[in-house]
Picture 1 (tube, rainbow over the protein chains, first blue to last red):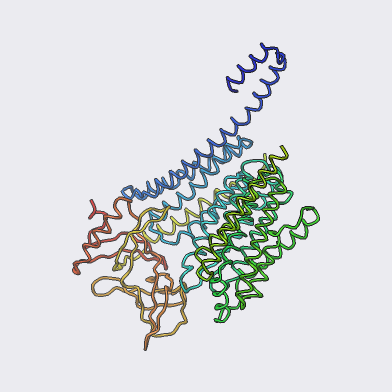
Picture 2: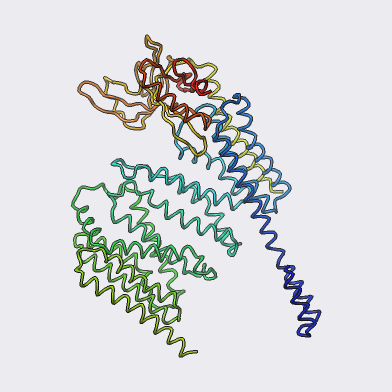
Length: 437
Length: 185
């Protein structure tokens, strides 16, 4: 409890503003309230300590102490593993309720397994891919998530599974060969879901739940592309898949489940809005539409053979399902972002041979989204939302700055109009505020 | 006391030891009982974030001219029957898609890719033992020593590999019969 607050309380008592009894109650309240942060600090220290020591051991092992005899190297390979296992067993028996012990020991054992595997590989010069190493490591450590009930292990599993997916799915993506599909990523994702659901049910306001949201959003955005195989074959389906994912995130972010989460720390909402708008801005160029037209005429693989095609369909179906399910709960006006994925899907499928119509649809829809936010900002009297809407138009204008297909005069007029729009909209809103005050 | 969790933890502990212990056991068996083969090499120096620095061994004996079309594709498992040439180096006598039963001098490898020539099929081989791990300070020096030694074609660079029941473990890498680690000292 801060000394300033104590002094202020004494001053308030001596000035007869509050009674000594009230001062005591306030003091007691803050003392109790401050109990929680110190516990959180201990957990954070425990986790950080274990993370650093674990990573340190991995690096020490990577140095390769090849001058040591083989038997001694083997002993050191198993020493951290044994220590980690003993610490985890101790936590299971004696410190089960202690979060710092639980998380710290689990993380230490998680990295000990990696260092043990690495040392054995060094001693016997065992080759093999990095993704193979990560996969074995995860298979040997992921059960700790439920045995130790460690949320940090869950986060590490998400992070390492994403790394694995990237290594498998993105390696050689620009080569003519088809890349591999990281199926194990999906298994690990399914594996952590019960834990995530538990966090959602019991600790929605906790840091671990928020961290899981961010990790899952970033991880799925990175990993979805690893299921493409070879981007050329699927072309518009890659974007339909991503647009559906962002659409689902937008719905989730705005759902009742996240109504207590601030927009600035709501990863689903942020990813949903930004992701959708970025895809639309990307398709506001005529070159991508021309490329789509060309790709339709060249021979392609059978769509039905691609897992990404089914994944995209699944995401699209999920989006429609959530939209219908949550429609009854919402009473707000028409929101164009909710229907962006459907419009986008129809546009890229129907207008693939008519680039002009596709281009027009996407640009018009971007303007609709921008106007929606400008209107929302005005109604809510929120400068941030208003300027976000204007920024979409500004981004469109900025992208058109380099578009040679539009005459200079039109581009110039578009820029001037956008600039004037910014001034007028902000001026009007500020004026409205003043008059209300 | 949740006995289910404790049993699950004990099972995990056993698996973590068994998986790592099995690798050690298998590799030790190969080193103890395996027959030594010298594979001519061409090393370079990359890094693995967990295992550290190593030199990649590109073996001279990495292409086999096959006279039979076995319909091999990339990443197919194959068994290489090994022989020793007059200079004492290992060479591939033949290859097979099935594991040899009577022969002990064979190694399990994978097909990197195949190329069809006029009268034969070149099978490009990927050996399971192509990484030699070294101290992080020694590995770059090893690479320099190797490059200098390869300028002189009379130098002999090879990996001594113990082969046992299809598995191979690198025992050491030599330049002119001197272990590469000793050359760095």
